[in-house]
Length: 509
Ligand code: BG6
Image (spheres, rainbow, N blue to C red):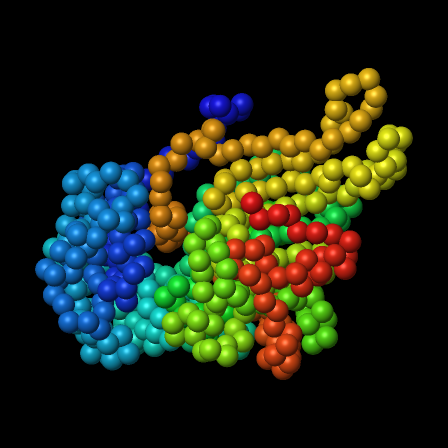
């Protein structure tokens, strides 16, 4: 099926301002796999400025020529679209490499000299986008050096912006400290805390679904919605990320960032304007309204678990504790399920059940909104409790779709009722060229639109909501860590969490 039913509202995008992108941690995976392919896609779409340059900063010994050659070689491997040499030239036509320790002030002198040369030769007008693709320990020191060296000072009409990768902190105290450090040097509107989930079309579409349609808002509240499930299931294992993951766990890795971004878009109040501050304030406000749980409540309303050996998608998977760089007696969770309540008028008494985990049956990110049941048994043959449940589902990945599940009459002489569903699939209507998911985020930063980037208060509200779980788990006996078979839907304890409330998770497809 193709074509829509109504008018399209499209604002033609313009190329971003001339600028230089400076990537710290340039020798890492992110640069090759995602950032450069995303810049390439922007060039293909005519959104990258003609005056553009790329500087890589990393510790390893290399040269501008070798770095450029490296990027030229890796781009065809990771590009999501066919290679067009003029677009390659636009992205990689001016590449420089600065070898240096980002913790050493002298590195910034070298970066400054390269920037001055490039800005003169390339006409990038002094606009600079610093991308912090380093391990998180680098964020504060790099921010401080950018401030002290003057490289990030906005002057003479030139903008200077800093993209900070995740994880932004490892708990509430460290996220606050990082915000304080960065805000001591940069203005809030120079800081872009990236969450790649906001680069996903279907995540962005949650806002359009809610606020460009009059249909949903009147029923988007506790009077009509019974509960909400947010699932981010991964079939991937921890793989080669053992040392990072074992110090992090599923809660820190996924919940305050990706799951809370989805939750806040689902649960926020309608913003007064589709503008960065109004949207970011609305999201921060709803995260701030998540009920803070006591230690006992946090234990009762959470399940943490680790995967045992099993089969995922017909591949044999070793137990988490056998992953390289993971402690053999590790108690780090690879799965978490939470029950959260939001203390505001819209959501009082509506539980939000969240779950995420590695090595599960399949990759599936889905929001499922369960509407209240019909109040009385009007149809003799089908009591209320045998009616199909009314779900609105938002499939985020890999199946990008919106579905509605409801009851219909099964054809025949008697009134017999069965559950049916209607599904809108993105691919039936829109043919988006494959992308990395970073294009919109990078472009938005280049044009100074922070609508998709959480603000300091939003980040801190997220950590505040998960802190009770971190605290409760730290002191909890080791036997409160459950286990699940790799390739399953998760631990039975997570099923019990919902069963207690007379509910069940939707299957992971
Ligand atoms: C990252 C996490 O932020 O998101 C990873 O650190 C996780 O552990 C990844 O696998 C999931 O992203 P996506 O886009 O594959 O759902």
